[in-house]
Image 1 (tube, protein in one colour):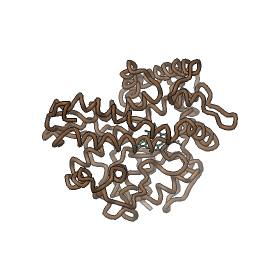
Image 2: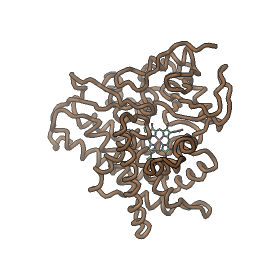
Image 3: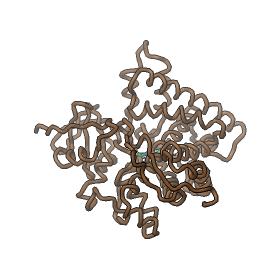
Length: 413
Ligand code: HEM
């Protein structure tokens, strides 16, 4: 069976990916792309089945390291960078994944997350205080990003004065992990950023081991499961993972959610009138335009799917945004409908690797979005706004969200 020609460009800063996903889902739901040298899987049933299927392996780091980074000429900095990634649970299969996830769950409990509610509100208000009098702002750079970065940095126990360092490091890792690497300079910066962050967290982990505190890094150091514990390197790598996973995606939930509301005044009115609950609205933002553009797997063995053989070793992009707009599951899927009740989307993945930070992301989004609407009166997109999207494959997020609003004084809070 020859595949129809469908031009896939998931790096474009301006092109809308949804028509491409619609075309793939309708015409070629398991599609080989010569450009990406990968399979694209776009229907809800196939994506959710693959996310539960151990033949779709999450470990795409070990084969890369073995093939590309094991020779005598390998740059030691690059090798060390990948050593950090090799310990990330999101890149592991059972039984290693099971062990890491169990230990991490001990540190990252629903109670720890819920306890953050007042602090997230305070941090959001601090940032809104800073912009409310200005009449215009970029809600990614001045609100969503610093908010989610501050939340995860505080959780990990990073002192306030070191936060800016975190932004640089995190940007560098985004380039590395989200496959947006362009020039050799960016690559070099990514490697340097990763190793600086590793060294920083190594020092911090040593401090909390000697003097335990009430923070997530201490909880990682102390996590125990039937006599098992995280190794020193695993604590540091997991700290890097949480820092990274903890704010890049949540920034995009806040940004994409606010954009969806600004473009759909009827839905915004429902939310502002209290006719829909913010918890349902957040699920709809995740379904309608969620931050996870693709989830990558490597075939552990040959698998037959819809008449194609996905050969062992081949790469597969599972596409949550497409699955989440599958008309077989979601009626009128292209419509933002905050009143949707059946909304079992795969925006946080599914199965073994289901997002561990989902309760935190929901909490942050559920505070940040309504607070911005409440504090920034008459909030609207800047009339000259030319929205662009980050040119990365794995994540869907705006580079900036320029808005205008009625300038208010702090006393209006
Ligand atoms: C809206 C925000 C978020 C989205 C859309 C999101 C999305 C995802 C997705 C799709 C996966 C599955 C990846 C896979 O199957 O390969 C995942 C896993 C994960 N996420 Fe999130 N995430 C978000 C926020 C967070 C936050 C706030 C944290 C932590 C602070 C976090 C930590 C993790 C971790 C540790 C995993 C790996 C779980 C595992 O491998 O078992 N995420 N996330």
